[in-house]
Image (cartoon, rainbow, N blue to C red; front, side, top):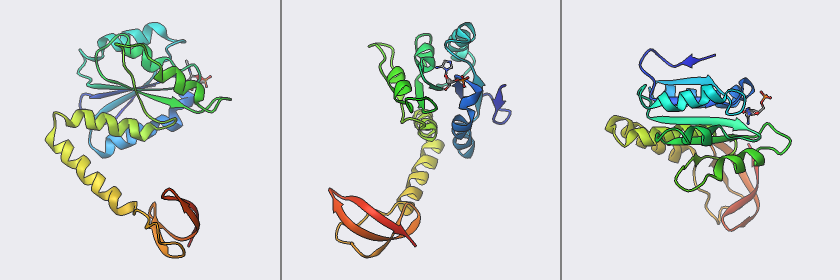
Length: 195
Ligand code: AIR
């Protein structure tokens, strides 16, 4: 079930190992859409559709795609399988929907042999996969680089750093007004009550 963002030729190819991954992986498409970058989202499992996955990887560069993102859970070999058959950068998103909560997918995705890299984001880190893809595209696109810089400025305003001496004071944390309480260890907040 392909989902295309806009009519322009996709620059980012997003694959998921199963339709059950879509609730998490759709976040990739949302971020890319926010930045006006055309992308396509398809389901293709390295294990259940090996030929389709191989075909996708082999044709991706020729079709004009610049970066691939692959999200899979459990024995997650999708990103690695793509990386094996293309020299496009491949970003892997290990997904958590398993009895092992994504540790299985993380290890399966990250432990690639030398010469065939996969850049791996956090478990369920679909948004960061999109931001990393944007950063790769921005290497050759100054307008996109500026958009990313302004997005980062926005983050600074949203995520205010906590003054280590501020126990008992009200601060804005992750965009929420909170009253700090408890001790700080190594700059980490131990507890905070929402206001
Ligand atoms: N998966 C599918 N083919 C290979 C793998 N590793 C993953 C999917 C999904 C999980 O297996 O990416 O996260 C369970 O898939 P399903 O379809 O059984 O829900």
